[in-house]
Length: 254
Image 1 (cartoon, helix red, strand yellow):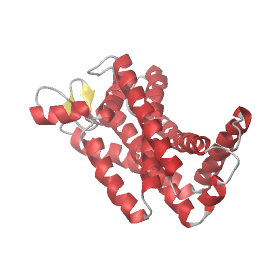
Image 2 (cartoon, rainbow, N blue to C red):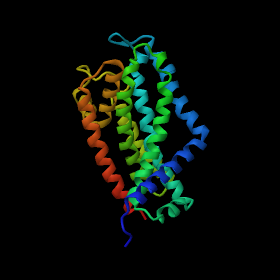
Image 3 (cartoon, rainbow, N blue to C red):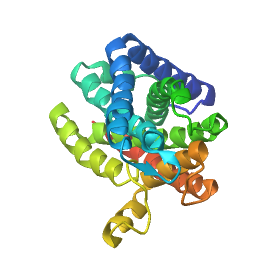
Image 4 (cartoon, one colour):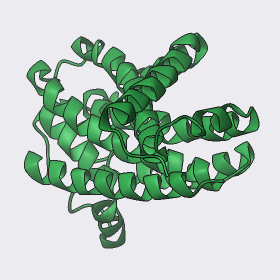
């Protein structure tokens, strides 16, 4: 049985992280599309509805900016799990798994790689924050913290799905089945207040991504339902659970 060596495991995590980052950086079309799509949501959808709607004193386009940031994290993080299936089909994963490190270290390296990819996309979107007058630039660091923890949870979810499924089509169907309800029930595009039906309000409340949107919106716009530490605590628990579940499923993958 292979002995556990902390230095070797850390080097393994770093090597896997670096490999995932290089794969992402080579795919220029993926980088461009991951930036253009959220901007289209903001300027077409946000400006169209925003022409006749505002939320309090905040322009609707500014109001959905935190929600679109969250959308970028959701899609980028969960669909990162596709790479597990691609690597398995190309026998790349087999070569990675025989490395002299534990599967947990490989899993953590992939989680960090996926989070790095997603946060680079988010950082570029933050560079456009000056176009949204209501955004407080001092709120960007705490918003990034919330988005990072959310990315850890959702990359873990994507890798868990990739570990269970063998076809790209199956992954896309199941992930879409999960992603769209999580996004549309997060309050990303509408205010969560007493005007919502009670059943919808209940669904929004149990959705962990509602706390992502609330935390980011609170940091950037000062509009929030819960204190920042509540959003942070709930998301940290969610991320810890998904890390645990994802690592188990990845370790048992054949």
